[in-house]
Length: 198
Length: 198
Image (cartoon, rainbow over all chains, first blue to last red; front, side, top):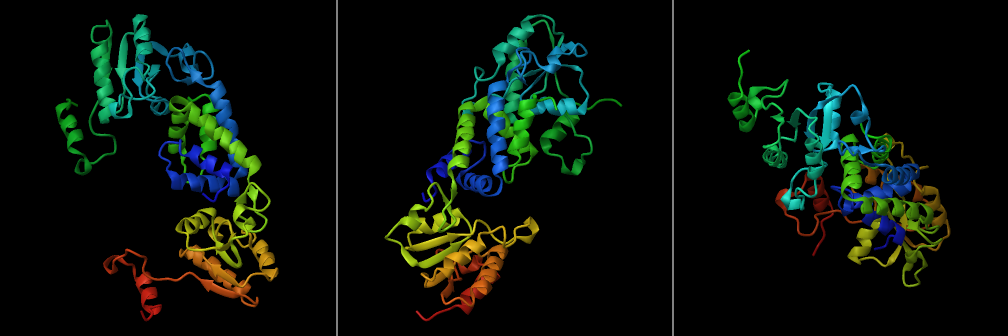
């Protein structure tokens, strides 16, 4: 280690970011100290602000600076619909598409035994209390169609089976703009199984 | 934008890191806030410390917390040799190999007109003052063998041409452990041109 102590500490800390190894951390530390000290200050400041201000909405579990987030607080959302997603990024994608006017519940992850993420690490008990309020008519399970996302969906399906609520999952099939030639067998299987009359 | 303001600000700030786009910044912000708040605090703290403590060694221009860095201050280094490298990571690699006991000069980058890095952005005037001290007998140009590194080396070679000092460049040829079958034409060209009697 020929780097000064505080540069070494910074490199070690940057390795805590997901997907960042020693070489990239080194490059980032170099960039911040040599090319963009203003950016470094901005990252320092925004981390501090986010840590102190951001908590979870007590209704939907999404990140929120207020006790109840803007979507949950909105009178124009159809609160009888609850769409369960894995992450804030998934919620954002649905909002951007503008295709849904109900409310959300954000699990903040998916089941992943290999990464030590079990049901206790996700906000599943909060989801069950939300469902127990009996104001919800339909739960739309919108976990990802990855292995982990599907396992999470299956797990929730089982947990929610005896609740007096309609449970649905997002439709599976060919995405818009896609070509048969390039579809994977799993998607084609779903597209055939779920085919419908026009 | 459905994320709270401070999450949005954090995502924007993380995009200042090299090679980080909006999707990765989103994933990093999620990870820091949901999975590793301790890591987030560590990054915040180490950025602050590095910004306030780290400056450049006034001899070699490497990062240093002291006016003169440990290598430059060491009496056991051969100060008549000056090895010019692009970055602290390059210096680190040479130190790790333990093959050189002279001193260094760190340019902190390479010439790259496309990124607006010209001679003024590198520490070239500091290098020239160092050379003007007349205590150096040999300058080893150890810029990378990339296009930019070679252009930087060529530029320095020209600048230093009339100084009363021996100028050398690192040997070019086949790296240890390599196989001819997988060598690129440029390396093979160097290996043939620079061949020597055993």
